[in-house]
Image (cartoon, rainbow, N blue to C red; front, side, top):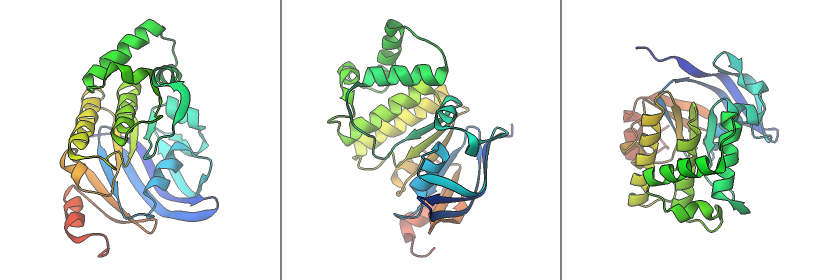
Length: 247
């Protein structure tokens, strides 16, 4: 069965605080597919993520972004989230005074558009913690405050399982992880895909190692704000062997 296109990015250019960063980017994200975005530091990978999510400092200067026949560029951030766009941050913010449980409950109700009782949500959250091998005490802690790198990534995965987005942008979710933590993250992503098979993933990474666990359908390499190369999973192996300089 042919996959339908969820997101069409056509000749997109993006500026950050009026400074041009991305130029003429075109990507077509099919339902249920994995697109890996690779490239050296400063190539524009995170800029693409923030622009798609609607960060106010990142503006579309040319091109279009169409999501299920709707113009994404005109949608406010909360509408993008409500319709199923999700961004896992490379460096999640710490918010002392707000518990993980409270934050996730508000996010769940906002994206689902319906109320859920405290008791029902707590049970749902605990069930998800079991799936990700997260200690139940975790959800009572302040949001990201004092979290290790691995704990922050697990919280992002917990959100992914709870919110079940249609498109998940994972911005370097593998950064700073040891081998064991990387496997846990990969298993969490696979679990989220199994429960939500129509979800598309835009996986931003520097390295091949997570792609040994999460095999992409497409790999795109950004250099100097442009897509220098696109192909299948073998592209990441070329980069591992040759680096980025040859591009």
